[in-house]
Length: 324
Image (cartoon, rainbow, N blue to C red; front, side):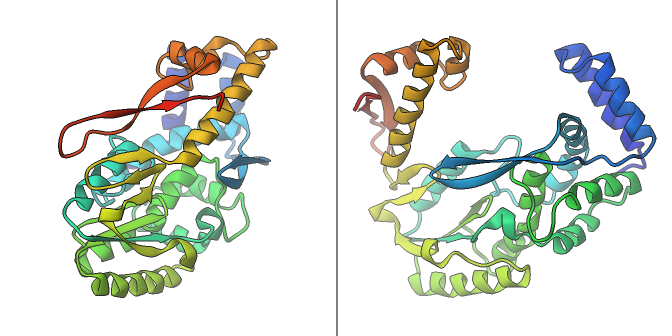
């Protein structure tokens, strides 16, 4: 990275937000600018709360000032780290994402008889901060950027990085990057992909995949992580495999029942709030591509394509009713 003034880069970004999106006003800019120019403490206290989405998660929301500065910082460091990630790392990357990961998973499942799925136990809460810092030092050399990154890292007690920080997404991707390269280049896992802490290796030799599972367990231990044994197993691709909210077969995929149930409950909640005037229809429309579908879902049954085109090219639709 060039020897750039990080504060200047941050506030060029702030000015763009102010002018283009009216995201902040002059008082916000002057307040943050004064603190950065004085090299003050950039990371404040987190507001913590829990969400219950399939399981309980502790979310740490940074103060408004810190979120803006983190956004500007990530605009600088994200392209640097993105260049060293393997192609098949899909979480929180531009041009990637869950849908692309599902497509790649389907492609690999058509070529292989088995798939090894590995999961890291309490991933974000288990990341060792000093190990993470060494990974960062391997790519970032600018002193100002390193100072700010260190402030963010030191805002929590090791081990663990806060779920909710924009920077945490980049750090979490970086933390397993060396494992990605090891699996792809040293162990020769040609059909491999990762979505954050979900590691997936395809193959037609079950014995070889069992060996790979042991190697993954060992390499995770080297960076102070623990494999979630109950969630790490080998599947036959012909029987379908759960992945990122779908049950995926080589020929088609289905939305998991638990996700449909969660959607129904969420829609009921939002439409009750709409009836009470707590929220407006724009809030609901943000949940779906077309607001009309949301209102249809509230009143009865909505037809949603949840089985995707398979080898035959056919598409099947299924009924998703919020009232059942």
